[in-house]
Length: 440
Ligand code: GLN
Image (cartoon, rainbow, N blue to C red; front, top):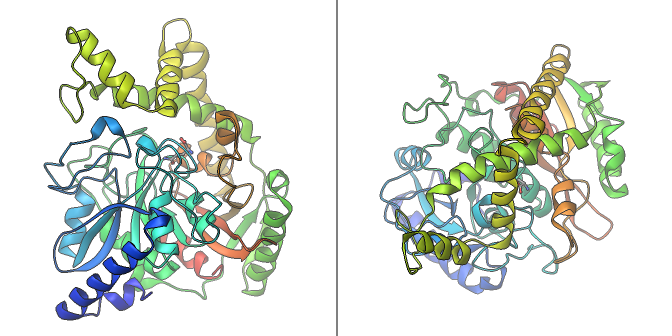
């Protein structure tokens, strides 16, 4: 597959021909189920779009039955920026329902297969985007990352996935899961393409009140020979499988050989991250999903009165995982429990932020696993709790609002891809991409 950098040099006719071939190839690989459907806007370079990003006149459903029939009336800001830069939204990719999950199994459209082994999950929630890039069915894709949903599927599928600093990329037009954690980011074949796509979609947007007033770009200044100070986490990696640990050790050696200085650091026990994240994310999700009532958007199941219409619509429209999170979110926000759970989670979140600030007083980057294992087999994680626990390496980054990038570094003994992530201080994307070049 040609890279994004190469594709940006193609002329109109070459692009039209390329898109025809791409379409045929996607149809041939329909079993992977990376795409929900294929539409194209404009004459530019085709980029696959996660099904929670608004593309005007497309059906956009966040992988949910409750949004069947909903047609987006406007473009997300990232889509507007892509169009200006000569990119075409091309196809919408499969995802866990409302981006809740780590396997893409909770989509209304069925599961997506991992192109490296079709018995394995592609990761999630941006599993369709990751599988599309990994299978050569997309030059690049957009995903969204609330607690790892770009980085973990990138790691499972052997591609690059980057989560920007909170506020770098506009959330206008992104179907909200947990608004204080969500960021849109690039999923690409290599680090340079990720930097190029990041540059295109990032920048201040007055339509998003949490958008940062920053417009600096990185891809023209990429510097692979910059020497950086990188923290490694000897205690934290003990929770990873032997394959991941081995990849981590090899990466440290490679970084040393590239001239980087390696120091050791420690993060607090990940059980605090997981609790703070699943309380914060479900609380925000409960609020964000209240709008899907069958009146304003998408699917309506008419009941015997208005209240029954709400109940029927939501009972039949949401899947089990989404219902579980709405219940959990309502619980932690209800009076009597709010102080004990929600407020405590916010205090923990503050401590997580502080621990990172302290580490970044002395280092440029942190090297961490992305997931404790390689892609699991379908059905292998048998309880929701097991799935939540597998997010231990990704979620603190969202709680602290930091940028991070997952880069494929090795294969397991079974031939499955292993990614590692670099984490940078807020707004240090240049350092993040520069460092990532030494990992690939
Ligand atoms: N697996 C995490 C969750 O289910 C992260 C999902 C995401 O980043 N959207 O909440």
